[in-house]
Amino acid sequence: MERSTKQRRAIREAFLEAGRPLSPQEVLSLARRKVPSLGLATVYRTLKGLVEEGFLTAVALPGEPPRYEPAGQGHHHHFLCRRCGRVYELSGCGLKADLPPGFQAEGHEVTVYGRCPECA
Amino acid sequence: MERSTKQRRAIREAFLEAGRPLSPQEVLSLARRKVPSLGLATVYRTLKGLVEEGFLTAVALPGEPPRYEPAGQGHHHHFLCRRCGRVYELSGCGLKADLPPGFQAEGHEVTVYGRCPECA
DNA sequence: ACCCCCATGAGAACCTTTTTTCATCTGGGC
DNA sequence: GCCCAGATGAAAAAAGGTTCTCATGGGGGT
Image (cartoon, rainbow over all chains, first blue to last red; front, side):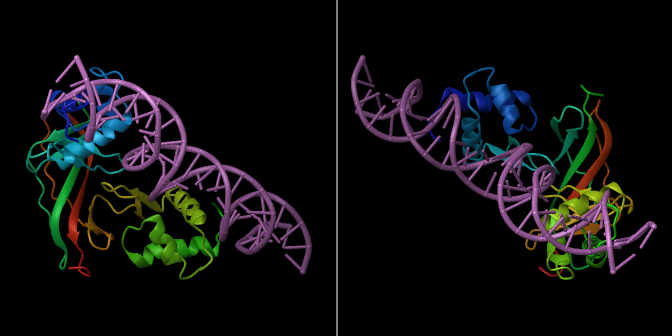
Protein backbone atom coordinates (compact mmCIF):
# COMPACT_ATOMS: atom_id res chain seq x y z
CA MET A 1 0.00 0.00 0.00
CA GLU A 2 2.31 2.73 -1.18
CA ARG A 3 1.33 4.00 -4.59
CA SER A 4 -1.24 6.71 -5.11
CA THR A 5 -3.79 5.11 -7.39
CA LYS A 6 -7.15 6.43 -8.48
CA GLN A 7 -8.83 3.64 -6.52
CA ARG A 8 -7.10 4.59 -3.33
CA ARG A 9 -7.86 8.26 -3.87
CA ALA A 10 -11.53 7.50 -4.51
CA ILE A 11 -11.79 5.51 -1.29
CA ARG A 12 -10.14 8.22 0.76
CA GLU A 13 -12.45 10.83 -0.75
CA ALA A 14 -15.50 8.68 -0.06
CA PHE A 15 -14.82 9.01 3.66
CA LEU A 16 -14.18 12.74 3.50
CA GLU A 17 -17.36 13.34 1.53
CA ALA A 18 -19.60 10.95 3.46
CA GLY A 19 -18.75 12.46 6.84
CA ARG A 20 -19.90 9.32 8.60
CA PRO A 21 -18.56 5.81 9.28
CA LEU A 22 -18.77 3.51 6.28
CA SER A 23 -18.96 -0.24 5.86
CA PRO A 24 -16.83 -1.94 3.22
CA GLN A 25 -19.93 -2.30 1.04
CA GLU A 26 -20.76 1.38 1.42
CA VAL A 27 -17.19 2.27 0.52
CA LEU A 28 -17.51 0.14 -2.58
CA SER A 29 -20.73 1.83 -3.66
CA LEU A 30 -19.53 5.36 -3.01
CA ALA A 31 -16.08 4.95 -4.52
CA ARG A 32 -17.52 3.29 -7.61
CA ARG A 33 -19.08 6.60 -8.53
CA LYS A 34 -15.57 7.74 -9.34
CA VAL A 35 -14.02 4.42 -10.29
CA PRO A 36 -16.79 2.16 -11.62
CA SER A 37 -14.48 -0.80 -12.13
CA LEU A 38 -13.51 -0.84 -8.44
CA GLY A 39 -13.49 -4.32 -6.90
CA LEU A 40 -14.39 -5.38 -3.39
CA ALA A 41 -10.98 -6.95 -2.85
CA THR A 42 -9.34 -3.59 -3.45
CA VAL A 43 -11.67 -1.98 -0.94
CA TYR A 44 -10.65 -4.47 1.75
CA ARG A 45 -6.97 -4.16 0.89
CA THR A 46 -7.13 -0.40 0.94
CA LEU A 47 -9.13 -0.19 4.16
CA LYS A 48 -6.54 -2.39 5.81
CA GLY A 49 -3.76 -0.16 4.54
CA LEU A 50 -5.50 3.04 5.58
CA VAL A 51 -5.96 1.66 9.09
CA GLU A 52 -2.31 0.68 9.29
CA GLU A 53 -1.12 4.09 8.20
CA GLY A 54 -3.43 5.75 10.72
CA PHE A 55 -5.90 7.45 8.39
CA LEU A 56 -8.84 5.25 9.45
CA THR A 57 -9.97 3.35 12.52
CA ALA A 58 -12.41 0.46 12.70
CA VAL A 59 -15.75 0.91 14.44
CA ALA A 60 -17.45 -2.18 15.84
CA LEU A 61 -21.19 -2.07 16.46
CA PRO A 62 -23.42 -4.70 18.08
CA GLY A 63 -24.54 -7.27 15.57
CA GLU A 64 -23.25 -5.24 12.64
CA PRO A 65 -20.34 -5.59 10.24
CA PRO A 66 -17.50 -3.18 11.00
CA ARG A 67 -17.56 0.41 9.85
CA TYR A 68 -14.52 2.62 9.30
CA GLU A 69 -14.07 6.29 10.11
CA PRO A 70 -11.25 8.85 9.95
CA ALA A 71 -8.92 8.40 12.89
CA GLY A 72 -7.99 10.89 15.57
CA GLN A 73 -11.40 12.31 16.35
CA GLY A 74 -11.30 11.77 20.09
CA HIS A 75 -13.81 9.94 22.23
CA HIS A 76 -17.31 9.82 20.79
CA HIS A 77 -20.18 7.41 20.16
CA HIS A 78 -22.36 6.23 17.32
CA PHE A 79 -25.90 6.29 16.08
CA LEU A 80 -27.29 3.46 13.97
CA CYS A 81 -30.43 4.12 11.94
CA ARG A 82 -32.61 1.04 12.14
CA ARG A 83 -34.26 1.84 8.84
CA CYS A 84 -31.43 2.64 6.45
CA GLY A 85 -28.56 1.09 8.38
CA ARG A 86 -26.37 4.15 8.16
CA VAL A 87 -24.10 5.02 11.06
CA TYR A 88 -23.46 8.56 12.29
CA GLU A 89 -21.02 9.93 14.79
CA LEU A 90 -22.27 11.51 17.99
CA SER A 91 -20.09 14.08 19.67
CA GLY A 92 -19.26 13.91 23.34
CA CYS A 93 -20.03 11.27 25.90
CA GLY A 94 -22.76 11.33 28.52
CA LEU A 95 -21.84 8.06 30.16
CA LYS A 96 -21.34 7.68 33.86
CA ALA A 97 -20.28 4.09 34.45
CA ASP A 98 -20.78 2.49 37.84
CA LEU A 99 -19.05 -0.86 38.11
CA PRO A 100 -19.41 -3.56 40.74
CA PRO A 101 -16.40 -4.17 43.01
CA GLY A 102 -13.51 -5.94 41.34
CA PHE A 103 -14.26 -4.82 37.80
CA GLN A 104 -11.73 -2.60 36.06
CA ALA A 105 -12.96 -0.47 33.17
CA GLU A 106 -10.59 0.20 30.29
CA GLY A 107 -13.03 1.72 27.85
CA HIS A 108 -16.59 1.64 26.63
CA GLU A 109 -18.77 1.97 23.58
CA VAL A 110 -22.22 3.44 23.24
CA THR A 111 -24.56 2.79 20.36
CA VAL A 112 -27.82 4.70 20.04
CA TYR A 113 -30.50 3.20 17.82
CA GLY A 114 -33.31 5.03 16.08
CA ARG A 115 -34.22 7.02 13.00
CA CYS A 116 -31.85 9.35 11.23
CA PRO A 117 -33.17 12.67 9.88
CA GLU A 118 -33.69 11.21 6.41
CA CYS A 119 -35.70 8.25 7.69
CA ALA A 120 -37.67 9.88 10.50
CA MET B 1 -39.73 -27.11 21.09
CA GLU B 2 -42.29 -28.50 23.50
CA ARG B 3 -41.01 -31.58 25.23
CA SER B 4 -39.05 -31.40 28.43
CA THR B 5 -35.83 -33.20 27.62
CA LYS B 6 -32.70 -33.51 29.70
CA GLN B 7 -30.86 -31.42 27.11
CA ARG B 8 -33.31 -28.58 27.34
CA ARG B 9 -33.28 -28.71 31.11
CA ALA B 10 -29.48 -28.65 31.20
CA ILE B 11 -29.38 -25.58 28.96
CA ARG B 12 -31.95 -23.74 31.06
CA GLU B 13 -30.03 -24.57 34.22
CA ALA B 14 -26.77 -23.40 32.67
CA PHE B 15 -28.18 -19.89 32.45
CA LEU B 16 -29.59 -19.92 35.97
CA GLU B 17 -26.30 -21.17 37.41
CA ALA B 18 -24.00 -18.98 35.33
CA GLY B 19 -25.76 -15.74 36.26
CA ARG B 20 -24.31 -13.99 33.23
CA PRO B 21 -24.94 -13.84 29.48
CA LEU B 22 -23.67 -16.89 27.62
CA SER B 23 -22.57 -17.52 24.06
CA PRO B 24 -23.76 -20.65 22.25
CA GLN B 25 -20.30 -22.17 22.77
CA GLU B 26 -20.39 -21.38 26.48
CA VAL B 27 -23.84 -22.92 26.72
CA LEU B 28 -22.49 -26.03 25.04
CA SER B 29 -19.57 -26.31 27.46
CA LEU B 30 -21.63 -25.68 30.58
CA ALA B 31 -24.56 -27.90 29.64
CA ARG B 32 -22.25 -30.74 28.65
CA ARG B 33 -21.32 -31.11 32.29
CA LYS B 34 -24.78 -32.54 32.78
CA VAL B 35 -25.38 -34.01 29.32
CA PRO B 36 -21.98 -34.89 27.84
CA SER B 37 -23.45 -36.05 24.54
CA LEU B 38 -25.03 -32.65 23.89
CA GLY B 39 -24.56 -31.37 20.35
CA LEU B 40 -24.11 -27.84 19.13
CA ALA B 41 -27.13 -28.07 16.84
CA THR B 42 -29.32 -28.78 19.84
CA VAL B 43 -27.91 -25.75 21.60
CA TYR B 44 -28.84 -23.51 18.70
CA ARG B 45 -32.28 -25.06 18.33
CA THR B 46 -32.97 -24.74 22.03
CA LEU B 47 -31.70 -21.17 22.28
CA LYS B 48 -34.00 -20.23 19.44
CA GLY B 49 -36.91 -21.91 21.18
CA LEU B 50 -36.16 -20.32 24.53
CA VAL B 51 -36.05 -16.89 22.93
CA GLU B 52 -39.39 -17.50 21.20
CA GLU B 53 -41.07 -18.59 24.39
CA GLY B 54 -39.68 -15.56 26.22
CA PHE B 55 -37.26 -17.22 28.60
CA LEU B 56 -34.17 -15.72 26.96
CA THR B 57 -33.24 -12.62 25.00
CA ALA B 58 -30.29 -12.15 22.66
CA VAL B 59 -27.52 -9.74 23.58
CA ALA B 60 -25.48 -8.24 20.73
CA LEU B 61 -22.04 -6.84 21.52
CA PRO B 62 -19.64 -4.98 19.22
CA GLY B 63 -17.52 -7.40 17.24
CA GLU B 64 -18.67 -10.37 19.29
CA PRO B 65 -20.92 -13.32 18.64
CA PRO B 66 -24.30 -12.99 20.34
CA ARG B 67 -24.83 -13.86 23.97
CA TYR B 68 -28.12 -14.88 25.58
CA GLU B 69 -29.51 -13.94 28.96
CA PRO B 70 -32.74 -14.50 30.91
CA ALA B 71 -35.43 -12.14 29.66
CA GLY B 72 -37.37 -9.57 31.62
CA GLN B 73 -34.55 -8.00 33.59
CA GLY B 74 -35.23 -4.42 32.64
CA HIS B 75 -32.84 -1.93 31.13
CA HIS B 76 -29.19 -2.61 31.85
CA HIS B 77 -25.82 -2.79 30.13
CA HIS B 78 -22.93 -5.17 29.75
CA PHE B 79 -19.31 -5.63 30.65
CA LEU B 80 -16.97 -7.60 28.41
CA CYS B 81 -13.73 -8.87 29.91
CA ARG B 82 -10.99 -8.43 27.32
CA ARG B 83 -8.96 -11.25 28.81
CA CYS B 84 -11.40 -14.12 29.31
CA GLY B 85 -14.16 -12.94 27.01
CA ARG B 86 -16.90 -13.41 29.57
CA VAL B 87 -19.81 -11.00 29.63
CA TYR B 88 -21.43 -9.68 32.81
CA GLU B 89 -24.55 -7.66 33.37
CA LEU B 90 -24.30 -4.16 34.80
CA SER B 91 -27.27 -2.79 36.67
CA GLY B 92 -28.72 0.60 35.94
CA CYS B 93 -27.90 3.05 33.19
CA GLY B 94 -25.79 6.19 33.49
CA LEU B 95 -26.30 7.38 29.94
CA LYS B 96 -27.42 10.85 29.05
CA ALA B 97 -27.83 10.92 25.31
CA ASP B 98 -27.66 14.20 23.45
CA LEU B 99 -28.65 13.85 19.82
CA PRO B 100 -28.25 16.29 16.95
CA PRO B 101 -31.45 17.80 15.52
CA GLY B 102 -33.52 15.43 13.43
CA PHE B 103 -32.33 12.22 15.06
CA GLN B 104 -34.89 10.14 16.95
CA ALA B 105 -33.59 7.75 19.57
CA GLU B 106 -35.42 4.47 20.11
CA GLY B 107 -32.92 2.74 22.34
CA HIS B 108 -29.27 2.32 23.09
CA GLU B 109 -26.65 -0.15 24.17
CA VAL B 110 -23.61 0.38 26.31
CA THR B 111 -20.67 -1.99 26.48
CA VAL B 112 -17.91 -1.47 29.01
CA TYR B 113 -14.58 -3.17 28.35
CA GLY B 114 -11.97 -4.13 30.89
CA ARG B 115 -10.93 -6.81 33.35
CA CYS B 116 -13.36 -8.88 35.36
CA PRO B 117 -12.56 -9.67 39.01
CA GLU B 118 -11.09 -13.05 38.08
CA CYS B 119 -8.75 -11.59 35.47
CA ALA B 120 -7.78 -8.30 37.12
C1' DA C 1 8.98 7.13 -22.98
C1' DC C 2 10.55 2.74 -20.79
C1' DC C 3 10.25 -0.65 -17.56
C1' DC C 4 9.75 -2.88 -13.22
C1' DC C 5 7.12 -3.79 -9.45
C1' DC C 6 3.24 -2.88 -6.94
C1' DA C 7 -1.80 -2.51 -7.35
C1' DT C 8 -5.94 -4.17 -9.30
C1' DG C 9 -10.19 -7.04 -10.49
C1' DA C 10 -12.64 -11.32 -10.72
C1' DG C 11 -13.47 -15.23 -8.75
C1' DA C 12 -12.19 -18.89 -5.80
C1' DA C 13 -11.16 -20.00 -1.30
C1' DC C 14 -11.58 -19.39 3.49
C1' DC C 15 -13.29 -18.81 8.20
C1' DT C 16 -16.69 -18.60 11.60
C1' DT C 17 -21.18 -18.93 12.88
C1' DT C 18 -25.65 -20.83 12.17
C1' DT C 19 -29.00 -23.91 9.91
C1' DT C 20 -30.37 -28.07 7.65
C1' DT C 21 -30.52 -32.97 6.82
C1' DC C 22 -31.59 -37.42 8.20
C1' DA C 23 -31.33 -41.56 10.70
C1' DT C 24 -31.96 -42.64 15.42
C1' DC C 25 -33.70 -41.86 20.04
C1' DT C 26 -37.10 -40.77 23.57
C1' DG C 27 -40.85 -38.22 26.27
C1' DG C 28 -45.20 -38.80 27.52
C1' DG C 29 -50.15 -39.86 26.18
C1' DC C 30 -52.62 -43.98 25.85
C1' DG D 1 -45.38 -51.06 28.04
C1' DC D 2 -46.39 -49.33 23.24
C1' DC D 3 -46.09 -46.06 19.92
C1' DC D 4 -45.22 -41.99 17.32
C1' DA D 5 -44.43 -37.17 16.83
C1' DG D 6 -41.11 -34.35 18.34
C1' DA D 7 -36.13 -34.04 19.83
C1' DT D 8 -31.37 -35.27 19.22
C1' DG D 9 -26.45 -35.74 17.33
C1' DA D 10 -23.22 -35.85 13.62
C1' DA D 11 -22.15 -34.22 9.55
C1' DA D 12 -23.04 -31.57 5.65
C1' DA D 13 -24.52 -27.31 3.95
C1' DA D 14 -25.53 -22.57 4.09
C1' DA D 15 -24.70 -17.77 5.01
C1' DG D 16 -21.74 -13.64 5.69
C1' DG D 17 -17.83 -11.46 5.67
C1' DT D 18 -12.95 -11.34 4.50
C1' DT D 19 -8.69 -12.90 2.25
C1' DC D 20 -6.12 -15.14 -1.36
C1' DT D 21 -4.69 -16.26 -6.20
C1' DC D 22 -3.04 -14.90 -10.38
C1' DA D 23 -3.04 -12.83 -14.80
C1' DT D 24 -3.28 -8.08 -16.24
C1' DG D 25 -2.87 -3.04 -15.68
C1' DG D 26 -0.62 1.21 -14.59
C1' DG D 27 2.29 4.44 -11.12
C1' DG D 28 6.43 6.72 -11.04
C1' DG D 29 11.56 6.56 -10.92
C1' DT D 30 14.95 6.82 -14.38
